[in-house]
Length: 322
Length: 248
Image (cartoon, rainbow over all chains, first blue to last red; front, side):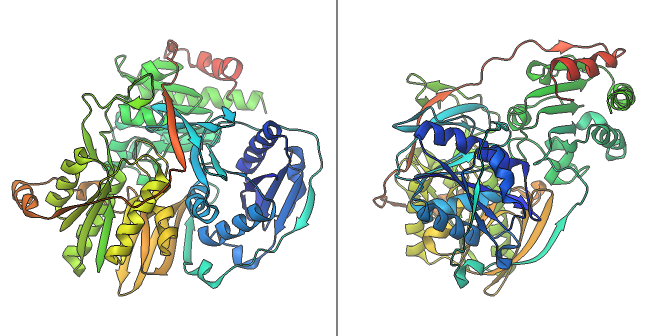
């Protein structure tokens, strides 16, 4: 009985969240006194998981799984879980993992807890801490089913290295025709751009920017930090920025290490969306902006003066610390 | 085309969140409840199909009598009929099983549910419902066209979007982008009057076990004071981010 972890990859390489999810699975396995088995789909170097405590990797190589497909991926993971008699299955909270998790939960007749932010509070009964009310609160969820499916919230656990060597074992799940009832016609993905989902740092702009023509300085600040760009709801509603950049309760949640808000007053819905970020910086000319109450660092000042200065100082900092 | 839109009855996005009974229950005192925003995008798209292509739109909710005003609002916006499954929506798996029964009894072609509710954020109901009813499933859907039995859906992926083709029956996890914010409708007086005459059926729940249970709530620890930095001294911010916060 292993803990099974699904390790997400892209173009043959593990995503960083795969290592975080594996690190978490290792700790859960330690709590249960068992080993960790990973399932890796179309990955070139599965042994990379050794560093994060994985004992065995089930390697799936199948051209039909080149494009992510929730049903087929869930089918493969279910078969791996059954083969390993896994009572705990760990996945992440990426868009793809959240797509396949409920399908997998039904397939495994598992109890599923998403957005889990810490190791289990207890294993008998099995209880985990997860976010609720869009980061305005936490709840302890008891999973009563025989199989527990945990969706780990991104950036909530970090990477934890441990000694060991993962053995690789080829695994060929039997996939059904109906797993492929949905076909991908096209993928439109910005290349070379840091996405909000993967970003360690997010730079976000609000109405204080006064118009889309002023977004250059947000992009400059993001570029020097290697950050993703984002925006508040009014900005996306007015069409200044695309809705996929909208961060907040009805937009995207952000769990970055650093979140810089420029010209955003901090409505309760926006704060809910960014609460999971570790360090928050606010630049706003209104000292009464509610965001200052939620921030770690703040500058009360004109964004049009402060941001270009900050970009210059960061460039100097980067040059000196290269 | 028969469309079913699954509606969650959730606290308004501006609600302050508190708990009672030794932090084991959500405190509904003074809280305004609304249609879950992700469901509202789905409902609006369903009404669009009804008006442009011809469809019937049923809304369904799993909940007690207190959720009926939310269903009536959906009727006032333009849904044709409503169903309330008379059970407390304690767990996503339980809710999905109740909805699966409604889907099977009603023979719906397209089922739309928000990608997640803004209260428990489980994000599990649409996918579970699709799997339980053996329907196709597209999550985080930001575009949907139906032509006969064929659906073309656009879903948001990390850093972009993907266009998918599939067949009905289909379950869609809706979100912002499926319709524009400006297309969301506010019920007008005529809609409210008509909603009073529309059918709101109440059905008893199917037997289903609860796979998970929220047993305790807590609020995030209070935040310390913000450290204010002079706008003339952005060097200090760079220094703090590097040496104190260690994020750059």
